[in-house]
Amino acid sequence: MKNVLLAYFALMCALAVQAQPTKIKPNVPVGADPAALDIEFQPVDAVVLPNGDIQMGVAPKGIVRNIGSLPYLTGGAGLNIVLYQLKNGKYEVVNTKQVISLNAGATVEIQYATTFIKGKQKPPKFRLEVRSVDKNVPNPDVNMKNNTREEAF
Image (cartoon, rainbow, N blue to C red; front, side):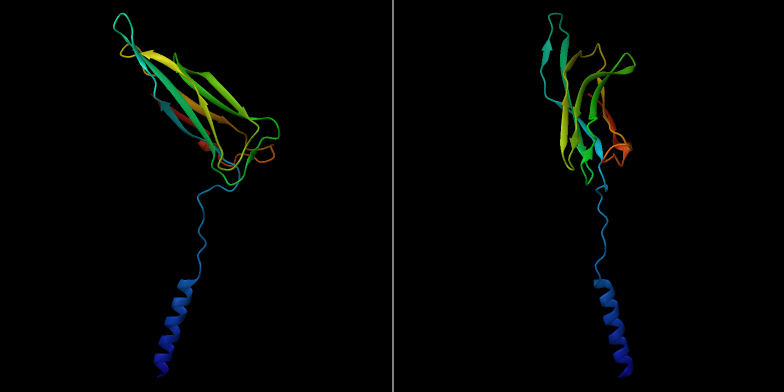
């Protein structure tokens, strides 16, 4: 009987240990984290030119979101979002946008439109950059590694 009681007590202890809540660590960074999430290409028209060439439209839309748990606060300096296009081997600025703060979960979009001649020119390549800072502001960026993204059409 003593062995049965000990076995029952051991079983109840094991069940109690398993029933204890475990702390699940969220994948949302603690702090502000403005991130260059994606460059989407919006549908645009193609035009057949008089010489038979096809001029393709390209309309990239850069998407930046604060994927952190706190708002990104710049202290009035502004968060710069920059869209670049690769031209002649180097990236050139084609559009910029500035926001003073970016709440947790908030999204900012930046757009641009251009064309290229299919078969004669390379499809364009773009880079999206979030120019945030990781110090000397009220609520800095906790992850600077996700602040750029490159995409080709």
